[in-house]
Image (cartoon, rainbow, N blue to C red; front, side, top):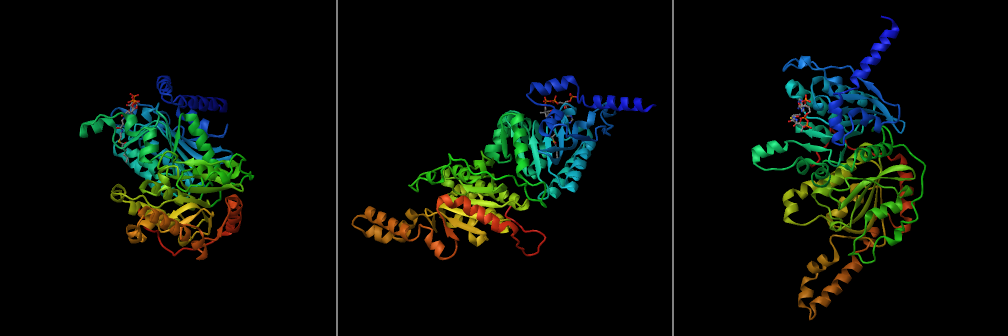
Length: 514
Ligand code: HXC
């Protein structure tokens, strides 16, 4: 054959493979409001940056007449490309080919690109759209999943791993996303569950739709399995690109520094927190009044909104913000908010991202529900995560810092590097009302006007303990600052902590309260 004919054949083969599961399957995919696997990859990556690998891999299944079936790319597209010029590895399951089901060679393509990502120390993006284990390939499919899960674990904390759920993701297949750092879902398109509605009907006799069981909103609001919610695929891809811009490529690097920008004028930090300490406000306004260009990229916005987590920049440097949200349940710590914050703290620590903690919370949520759900175990995760983190850790106490919550929210005692407090800070074992009722119960009961006495004792308590100066006198906070000084103090702290170096006791790994 001449070179020309070889080239011609190569081109024809490529065109054939790129047809995926054929026009009918592609039409079905489009009718569901879904892009094809290839379109998704191209939409996420920089233009002309995609290099596909293993395009001609074919399956080895021989049972159930499978030898006669041609499955282009074995139902998954893998390769490398760039996002904002930064290299990444990517795979996308192709639902048009055998429902994107995972057979042995399909799994091998995925594990090969995972190994590549880990070796090259670049982020991995996995797009899931699949009917799960390929039934005809039996245990080989299960083995394939096991190999993927093992690599997810190996890569955890070394390279960023992003999972994008753009179709069904059922059975044990959901455990790969669960082992990765960030899960993206899209309204009406994403479906994740261990056992589907038909199994639930058979076993439990309950009718439930796929959407109610494991739709995008369920995973963002209720289950906490997903971190980003989008209305459509394009919005989801924009979120992925934004995230990749903010985080480092691996645990051996820092996030790319960009030009610094002052916060926008519309956020006046002195006007956000109400005079009356009982009134709520939006902590995100405080973050926006501090962060470069007032930009805050929130993570898990819909889950446990009593704590807010996400990335913002200070002096062009990516920081992780962990902030109580007084607007929701007064910003209390509970099981879910502890889980949410602890995991994020560990992410920041793994990837060299300084952590800024903004504190205004009345403590851990009391109640039988919380106790029985394991608030002791879940609440301990925050203590563990902050104590273990060695990245720069800075706390600003804005208002309430009571009890166990005061310790948990990156206090000096868990080795915060800097603790600043606004003059409005109230640092004490508990709030003035509760404390006065306990400590001065006798005086209140015996007073001729108990209500007036109660008010007086609350004021006395406030005067004595509910301020930042008792803690400042002990050196537990470094400075009481005016709200307008917050950004400049944070910039100062970050610049002092630029070369922070601490060593922890040698161990294989700790045993966090998982
Ligand atoms: C082989 C599969 C398949 C699978 C779908 N297909 N799932 N082939 N193994 N698991 C094929 C279909 O036969 C069909 O092929 C094509 O993909 C499209 O599927 P449809 O059913 O026509 O699509 P749709 O109506 O959109 O329904 C999608 C679906 C449904 C809800 C995902 O296909 C489904 O329920 N699939 C089975 C899901 C499941 O139980 N998987 C196993 C989970 S257990 P043709 O040739 O007709 O186009 C598991 C264990 C993992 O995954 C354990 C890891 C530890």
